[in-house]
Image: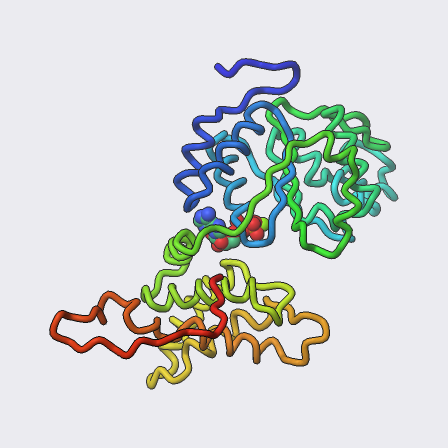
Length: 321
Ligand SMILES: Nc1ncnc2c1ncn2[C@@H]1O[C@H](COP(=O)(O)OP(=O)(O)O)[C@@H](O)[C@H]1O
Ligand SMILES: [Mg+2]
C-alpha cells in the first residue's frame, strides 16, 4: 500500500526508476530527480531541446508507476476548450447543455484517470490555456463552465516540456508557473550515449552510426547554423541509408544523400549566411566521414620497423566539438 499525502498519492519511485533505466540510455540523474519529484506529488517543467529523450523518459516513468500518460502537443490552437473539454455543439442544439453532451479534453481525462498529463512545447500554449493549467496546479481541481468542478485523482501529475531555445513565447512562462513546478533541465548526451541510442532505435553498421552521430554533433556547433540536429537526425540518417543502400546497388553517395535528406530540414542556417542548408550539411557529412588523422586509428599503429612519418606541425584551428 502506498501512503496517502492529502489528496496526492505517492507514486512508486523505485518502480519508476527501474522502468526508465530499461528504456533509456544514460540519463541516470534525470531519471532519478524526475521520478523523485513525481513520486512526491510534484509537477515538473522539463526544459531541453527536442530529441533529448523527454517523452521517452515520461512514457517509461508512467509505465513504471502503473499510471496512464496523456500527451498533448502545445501550440497556438490549444485553447482552454480543447485542453479541458467542450460541449458538443450539435448535441447541445438538440439536447441542451447536459453532462452527456460534454466531451472531455486531455486535461479532464488525465485528472479523472489519475494519469500524467504531458504538455509538450508549453511555451507555445496561449495565455488563457496557461492560466487554466496554473489553476489546476494550485488547486488540483478545475472549474468547468456548464459542467462543474472536476477534482484530480490522487495520482494525477502535470509535466510540461519546453525548448529554451525556442523563439516562440518562451518569455510568457510566468513566475507563477515556475513557482508551482519543479524544474529539470535536460541537455544533449555524450557522443558515446548518442551512438548507443541510435544503435537501439536504428540498427546499422557501426561506422555509419558513428558518422551519423558525429554529423549531428557537428551541426550543433557549426558556425553557419543557428539550430543543429538532435539525435533524431542521426537515427534518420542510419534508417534512410539502410533503405537507400538496398535501392542503389552500386552504393553511390548513399551516406551523403541520407544525411542531406535527414538533416537539411532539421538545421537552420544563421541569418546573414549566404549558403543553403544542403550546402552546410554536405560539408558536415564530409567532415563526419573524413578518415581520422594517421596515427589515431589503432589499425594504423606504427610498428617498430616502420619509418616514422615526418613531423607535422598543425597550425589550423581544430574544431573539438
Ligand atoms: N536517453 C535515451 N535513451 C533511449 N532513446 C533515446 C534517448 N534519448 C533520445 N532517444 C530516442 O530519440 C528519439 C527522440 O526522443 P524523445 O523522447 O521523443 O525526445 P523529446 O521528447 O525530448 O523530443 C526517440 O526515438 C528516442 O527513442
Ligand atoms: Mg517529445
